[in-house]
Length: 599
Image (cartoon, rainbow, N blue to C red):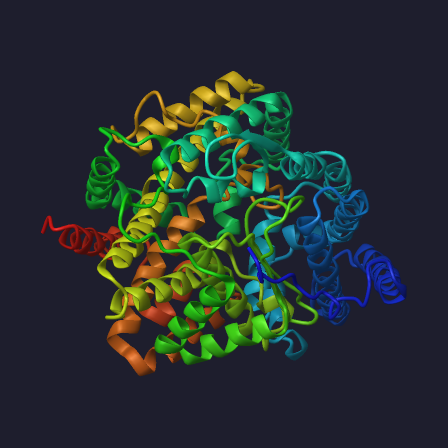
């Protein structure tokens, strides 16, 4: 898309592999060596050793900031040029350094495993570690599920050429993969996999069908590799769980999400019982597309006829900033700053990694947004979504690094809330035609379907996959069967049984992210929580900014349940909260029906 920007990374380092870059890495290596030596010299945590422990965590905090700065930079380079071997090699170097960093903490975890609660609290009470109590408490809990120092170090070392290498292989495959297309105005062509999402939002049903079928044919060609990667990633996690005495493979994902099984189960029960209006919308959408049932490729399709929203980059950014400004001026100012300083990468070109993300340096406290802009309403929402992430990091910028590490469950709330502001602005604007409003509601209800059905499908697949992987490797053919089973359950009878997506397990990057397992349910969690925030914003109006920023500021120093309780006064472990949130899609479905003349 013309005028879509490329980002400026020079505030990280003036140039890749230049003097400043090499000096940063050399200092990082030196500091990790110091951390290793200090960690090895601390056999106990008690009153006599508190000073040394304070020194260790201050050193760790400095390394954390420096490492995140380097890792964020290299991640940006590798995403924008997935075929650049130097960048991919540097990603491997980051993994190696990360393993060494984790190794340095192995004796720390061993000491914390044996330390009593009083000693941990005494450490947290030190003025130099102010605001670190939550971090240290979680460290104590995490340490209870760790092996001895030698085995943890071995696991970390092996991870570089093991689980992390499988993730890098997948990134390389997806960045190089393309598929053949003949449908559409462009005619016969090869399309980078990164542009598949855009084609699935095309108005031409044949373009959508080819995009799914032909991209899946490309994934079929590397199914042996993706199945091997998925098995290796899951197998590594399961093996480590076994040696760490963790019987349930959801323990670590829930801990990483800073939530509980009670809350997760309450959320899914509410979704299953209250998603009726979303399913009804999908049936209505099928009829509007002239189908008895939707094909999987139709889930993100625009409505037929009428006005199909399409945006230039300038129109998209104007829409996002004005939408933010109408409800939350501070967010609009931040978005304008991010765009003016070239912190967004959106150019559509070959060689880019699929997907979108926001990354933040804990050293400079700057964020960068990555996406591929094709001019669709979905692309506008993606821009808003990733800027929401970046704003979240800005709110935490005055927090120390150890108090700025927030879980996905709460991260996705800020981003999805930002998307909703754009949608609300379009729906409230009398200058926007009913045809466009129908498309906005279509997009909003498509999102509801993603969070209530698609994410549910991913979660069901992963639970079944990890269950079977516990007994041995799962073949590519079996992965397809498990995925189809999950689609049938999550989408009920809504999808054409002959037009499902058996290769979704291979094409979805989220299954191959090695740093986080079960990279799915936090999206539904954040979506529903964002609906609650949107309702609060409507009710509180001018005072909402304080409520919202209080909530965001808590996300690095409280569990999901505590952050919501303290800022919003809600109990996430109860189905009632989630059911009230799901009233939002029901209202959207009713408004959509009214605009279609069905109300």
